[in-house]
Image (cartoon, rainbow, N blue to C red; front, top):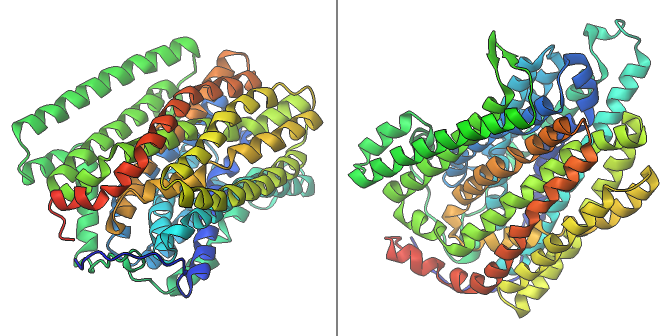
Length: 539
């Protein structure tokens, strides 16, 4: 690898803004297709005869399993192959999977659709973030991440607008039984959501790929076998085939014992949690392909699967890529991932059920909820990140590393307190007034935290870093947040307001972790190259 040079330029590459625009659209559609289930939940529940717990499984757990698992090999592929083409293929695939939901007549096909969306979307963040960081220099990355964060917020908001309006228009136009193909409004909404990804895939396929690492002064040679490496990661982390990978790489007796003991602990813990969940919120079995499966057993089985994948990944990196293992063991990087994961538990739990909360508590129609809540969330989701991104860049110039952390702390320390106030609102008008402040503060966390996280690794490691963050945040955020809110709601007689308020209490450890991060981040960022060299990186 070429030697490291000092690069202090604030100049964005030619084509950088175009790349950021397309990657931003990818993130927008990713969240739109992922979150549209939230606004359609009441119609789906009525048609398929399922409860909030099952909707939590569809919104979080089923999607999370394959999103998390495939993010790892696709993240490794993003570190070695053409990222523009990887993004094009991914969005084309998940758009088709979104369209499959339109034909769902039961839980199983809808779950299959979510599975496909999860696999396709698994490439969006690793490839997209890596691509953007090769166009934007370090002093401008807070701004770049702000644009991506705003795109995510717009996708979340538009999912409510598009889902509510499309489903409402269809149901109003066609009386029961008279619609083409027998579609309900929620099925039509999935078809509409699937369409925009197709032309975007074509634009991404034609976009120029930047030189990896050049803007950081760490140019990276081409990977001669990116697909082989990606397949190796999938084999190394997938339970069952991981044993072959351990044997092939000459794992020591200690590593075999760690793997076996970890698997045993995970299985026992998940069995206990499944039984606790069933005792707290009893649910009938789900029918999947002729099999009867307890939803709590499915939930914690998926979480356990994800945890075991993380353990396998750590062992795989240690054996196959010691520099990446050494760099990613940085305390500050671990804290960043922990903070993002716990916060994702709040975000997905709150956003997954807020549309249902509004319709149930204030008797709003789906179309009205979609327009009001969706547009408000989208607008504030743009303003918050676009404030915090440049502010965090400004703070980081004055307090290197720590400046971005303090911006994150302000957002995540205040927003849960405001959230408890929001979901006590007596009417819709009061709710929206309070939610304006809540959403503005809440959406400020992502740009500074992500900029800190990806500056903790070498350019060639950004894809696998994003994938590792995805799997951890998906397990604890998307995998647990909606499930907990749904379970608490079912146990409390359907009180979604109480359930949403309860999930905000997990913010306490976030504040503690961010204080620690503020004290360690500059030291750890300065040791990235040192850690990599000590582990054998040829920089």
